[in-house]
Amino acid sequence: MWTDAPASMLHQPSASASDDRAPAPTPAALPFPPPLPRTDGAGPTDAHLVARSADPLPSSSHPLAMEEAKAAQDRDHKFLSIAVEEAYRAVDCGHGRPFGAVVVRNDEVVVSCHNMVLKNTDPTAHAELTAIREACKKLGKIELSDCEMYASCEPCPMCFSAVHLSRIKRLVYGAKAEAAVAIGFDAFIADALGGTGHYRTANLEIKRADGNGALLAEQVFENTKGKFRLK
Image (cartoon, rainbow, N blue to C red):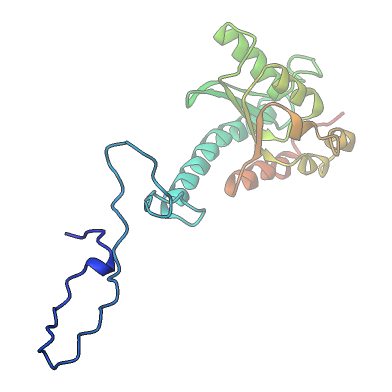
């Protein structure tokens, strides 16, 4: 067992007057290890004496982080695909323009809707607005703070305002507004929020879908542009 005895108290061989041998040199002090940290919870512990072990946070290249990111991407893709299907349905049914939206709560679809401007003869019956109206009716409340929205395209200012007012907590969209502008939709709608910081300061998470989700959403406009009229 290690003790804290000073070097002067270490055992040294004794030398008598009659001993003609040279006295043995005094040995150097032995290096004593630091005291073990207390485990009874009493007294402070110094960080340099106590090695604290902790699991490192997973980096973006950590297998666990990569697995979680893939699962989140697959989840977003699943619900966005429903919104894309609604966008095609809007045109195929003659109800409106190629836009779809889905409201999700606790990983379950509450409503899936599409643009209804032609069927309802209502220029405000956009997919996102229609989905919010239907979700509020179905859930019996005017705040959707426990819900997410998946939109086939980046919302226009009107729809974005409705998303904000309904307190939806997360918005995921597929195509950029520029993809709609490319086939003839009004450019001012895409530019309305540009540079204003509204997206950044809104009290909700906004994300553009990754990978194939965004690509499939953008293809909607090219695949349907000959099937509907803008005016």
